[in-house]
Image 1 (spheres, protein in one colour):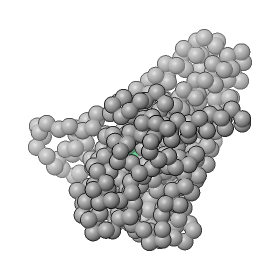
Image 2 (image 1 turned 120 degrees about the vertical axis):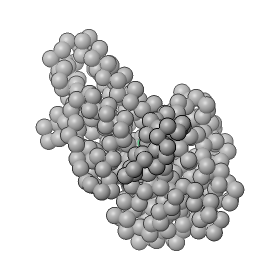
Image 3 (image 1 turned 180 degrees about the vertical axis):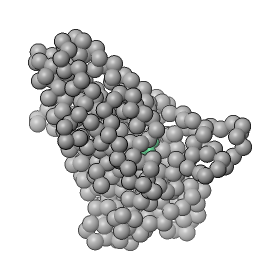
Image 4 (image 1 turned 90 degrees about the vertical axis):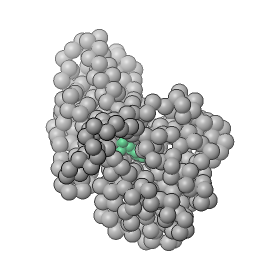
Length: 355
Ligand SMILES: CSC[C@H]1O[C@H](OP(=O)(O)O)[C@H](O)[C@@H]1O
């Protein structure tokens, strides 16, 4: 199921509206800056890599509307779009990473006509999605080496194809293993308050025919205690250079439980989620969201007193000491992460310079 694509006339981004899943399969055609911001902010498109891919396609579509501008005016408008889209959600680094990649296309080709620059922006946006498909497949392959037939795996939030381009990250090894005829038992944290696990992960895994058990977030300890879980696989939104990792709220609690029960805890994500400017978890901005998501969202009636004070951080940071390994498209990083992440980013830089 394609979650993000360009329209046939290449002037709109078509997304699967993830807020309607699993009850409705609805597609949205988006071609305005405001609707792009709204789609990211309200998680109609979500998941770090998917947000980056969407923003790249989106700013390509917007750039077509100013193709008749002289370079300076074009660049000023372009960077205005970029800053506004970046302000939609602060934690997932892939949003700013993808937009910066698109901005570099504009600056590195300033001698070209704006018509040529817009064509190059289209190529770059398609490359970003194509690379993500390849990265997710590679990450899935590395992750699968850590699993055995019949393993129980616990996941948190959604890091499947809907959150990326194909395979997903945390779900990639499970889906790839399934393709190869392997059997796993997956315990899916519902992931309050927006229920990405219940609404999206359970949906994706069931569609793939994977043995799926949906649990409330407060049941993770129980299934681990019963020795039903042999590994925890989660996605990521921003990885600091010491290995501290921001992911959906509740992830750090799963990591602490896994440590207590002696269960390996793996973070899976592309190197585009590693933030080389980020020294440690304290440097990661955590998005705070509307309290209505706790009180009412996805429920027929309010399920808390209207005036109760709430705290609704969308992410938390898992301390690097709780992470068994970080699985990327360049291999599996293990502690000490300052060294292993630096080596992986150096390997990526060298490979990019030779291609
Ligand atoms: C493959 S990245 C998925 C990552 O993004 C999710 O956050 P959100 O649903 O708010 O976009 C969650 O942290 C997942 O692990």
